[in-house]
Image (cartoon, rainbow over all chains, first blue to last red; front, side, top):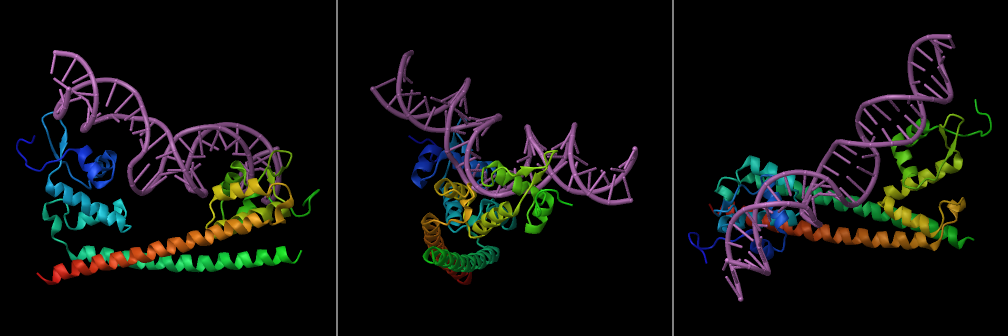
Length: 131
Length: 131
DNA sequence: CATATTCCTTACGTTAAGGTCAAGTAAAAA
DNA sequence: TTTTTACTTGACCTTAACGTAAGGAATATG
């Protein structure tokens, strides 16, 4: 079973739990989003509760459409890195607000795009019908 | 001036007119969207009225959010390739309709994403305020 | 202990739509 | 004619977020 840490998990198990691949987890570590986890004697990664929380947080932000690069910038500002992971600062609010605006903009763009397509469609239909 | 064709243009001029780069035009030819244009003695590409219309059409569809790959499929179905470029068939209508649905879906997704972000934001604000 | 499973690192592949040289010709202008 | 542009092909580069081996070591199971 487990020797020192009561609730540590290996990478495969963790990936399965979260519905992602091991590659994804290693990748997040690779680009500095996850910070080096503890390792077993042989080098096998071990993730504790905190690591898991952080990973879930990352996945949540990703779900919200925030890119990994943006998360890196986020991590620069207030340190997700240094255990103060749950000390959420106004900077996050700021970023979320920016994201809301971005989303609003995208919606607006898509709406006018939709109109254009519909118009174009109408014109084509007219041509077809006038033959 | 011009010897045989009255209104033929070279690639640089055409690119400038349409606000794109020469690379783009060559690329469209490369992937078969444009079909081989006529050439001068030395190999310089020459684009006639028809070529220009086709290119404009491609750019229009691109503006509408249709990918180059989709245009290729489009070209398979009814031949943009063989001068019947302006014989618009119902297949184009079909594709435009598909696109309208896609756009609608994207809008819906972004809307619920927006809600989620706002909710998340509210929760964070609550945490900050309760401190 | 042997085998099966999981894990490790390294590193190239993937997608879209071109961008960016580089080396070499052709055409247009002076 | 010389110089300056413009054009040619070929080939490697770019971004995001991983996918997918390859080859080897470690852990778990019978």
